[in-house]
Every structure is written in C-alpha cells, then in structure tokens.
Length: 115
Image (cartoon, rainbow, N blue to C red; front, top):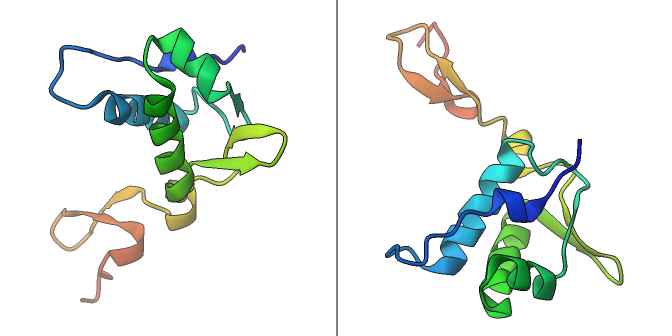
C-alpha cells in the first residue's frame, strides 16, 4: 500500500479554524487511523507546503506540535517520521464499558467492578 501524506491532509481555507490547526488535525487523524503508519517518512515542510498550497510556516507549526505531542519524531539529517509508538498506544487510551453502570471510561482510570 502506498501512503501519501498529501492525500490525508484536508484543508478548508474558508473555515474559521486556522490552517495550521487543520493541517495538524488531518495529520494526527491520519496517524491514528494508520493511513500514515509508524515509521512513515513525511515530506519536507517545503514540499508539504507546496503540495497543500499553504505556507511553509503553516506546515512547520503543525509538524512541531505533532513532534511535541509524540506523534512525530525528527531524525537529524534524515527527516520527520511517524513515531513508532504514538501517544494513544502508550497511554492505552481505548474506551471500555465500565461494568458498574455502563459508563465509558479510559483504561487508565476505569474503576473496578468492586468500587
């Protein structure tokens, strides 16, 4: 399967949501949905900007936020890559039904059935 970050990015220039935030959300969703798998090398910011029709600063801001949150990692001289372990994998943030009331909770904070 060929992966393409520009196919993942969806921007609406008429939206009230800033372009860098739209770019960030599109990439983050692509990572979470495994459209951009772990280890995938993203294009350079200049290439992504040209392909998306936005400024390089817009792309750089999105990349930097994703790096700060652990979705992307940079490798000096090699580029920017989707992290091998994304934050949701590390935190086990998968909704589960709590047996004591049917509430949806996170794995890390679900009360036990005995509570």
